[in-house]
Amino acid sequence: MSLNNITKWTVLQEEDASPSTWFPIVRQTVQLAPDHVVDDYYLAPLGDVVQVLALTAANEVVLTRQYKHGLGEILLELPGGMQQKNTSVIQSALNELEEETGIKANANQLKSLGKIAINPTKLRQVTYGFIMFNAEFNSTQKTDATEHIQVVTLPAPQVLHKVMNGEIWVTDSMNFILKAARLYPEIFEKE
Image (cartoon, rainbow, N blue to C red; front, side):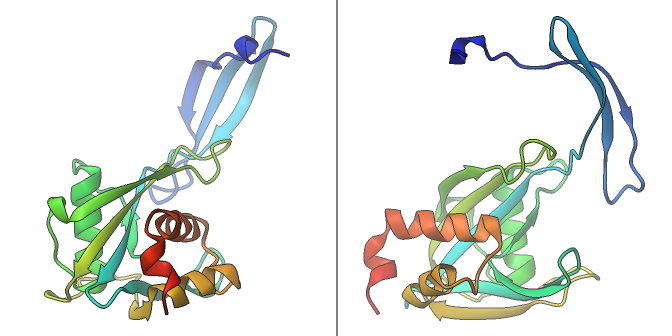
């Protein structure tokens, strides 16, 4: 099969099948090829996510440690969250960084680390990553009712080591830490 033969599916019908407003699910009828229709394709349009790899002046990475109920685990990851309604990706990243860590920043301090999709088969969700240098704790945390967040700062090489040995294992955090380590090896290699 040639790559030129791959085409996008056509959505013939879509209906909301959400069990709640917290977890949207849609049921689609999709046409894959002229003679192939699937009438019960489910996907979750959860919305996009933002994450910030914030580095202090001492090249320490700012991480969040919190309980994640979906896995039933206390996890170490980069600060971030859902893109807020009617808010740009960058402004959402700035808001989440301040809410979760108490670091207030502005848009020109963020540099893009790109975007990733964790499960493009069943999720309509893109995670946008940013890196920030010389982060300062200059505000206060403003967590949601479901968040109890401990802020942790660790030297960048130690954070990379935690990714490599499996202590940091949330996909989007891992990807952005690894990408930052490739782009800025001088920060992540010296200890």
